[in-house]
Length: 180
Image 1 (cartoon, rainbow, N blue to C red):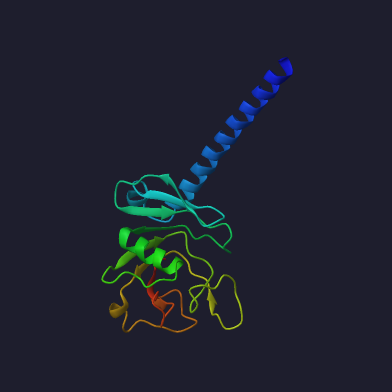
Image 2 (tube, one colour):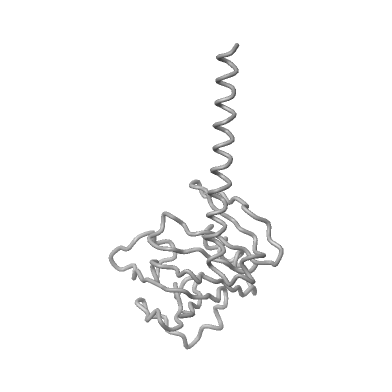
């Protein structure tokens, strides 16, 4: 009986340590997510995180209509992001390879940068011959504004220190605007 109680106590302690670790991990994820936008936006935003299977988890409910996600550790550089509700619909369409919603222009922050991505292939996961891999510093994005991007550069290898169109010629083309 004493051995059974000891095992039960160790299991309970292990569960408590795992819960404390999850809370600490969530706090780090929230801090990472909040780094994407100004504090006035990030502090009231819903915070979402994706698990390794691509399932979305809510870390914090929002109260201002914005959402944020932490850095993806699988990507080559920092890429936390925040956006409004329209940008979430656009991002979900991109992730699900569906057409973006009609008539819903969105705004996103990536103030920690969005280092490393293909400027021409929305689904590239690593640099490869011809996929025009680029590095971007801190920026904001206007998404789902196809008819409003005329006149902005659409070069495969753009000057990322100036506004340009990322993923031109795709349904996910969007305006990248550096902020530093």
